[in-house]
Image (cartoon, rainbow, N blue to C red; front, side, top):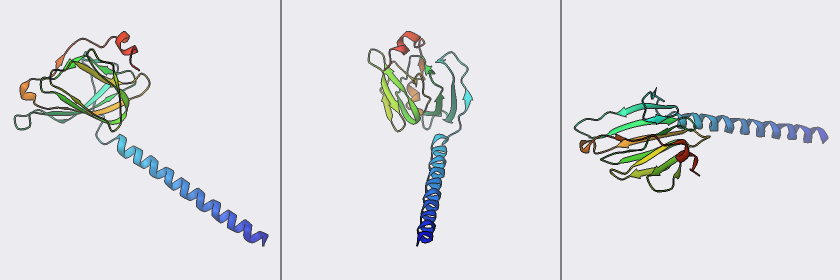
Length: 163
């Protein structure tokens, strides 16, 4: 009788271990698939960003669609300068957490799954939090109204006030 209980217990623990291990592999595989939907792209080397960020253009502007779409990845602390888009902008957050702020308003926490609709000519910035990375799809529609207007950097003092 005792041998049967031990065999049953060993079998049960083995099945439980395998099930948990397979579930963990599935979670890791799903995380990998969602974090790398699009390539990270090239490191941004212009003065319109503070910190390290990468850009992979997905759709370049043309006369048919009048839209640009790019995948932007920010390391912790990285952010855009203040800027505005004559045709507005839409951000689709695909990974991580960060912030979006319109001039004169408090910063808003943004995280994976959030959609931010930025009205035309609204001065704003967006980027990663101080200790988290952020990846978003940046859609700039109505480019026939003009391209992005880059303004001054978000100062360390302004950035330190985000909560």
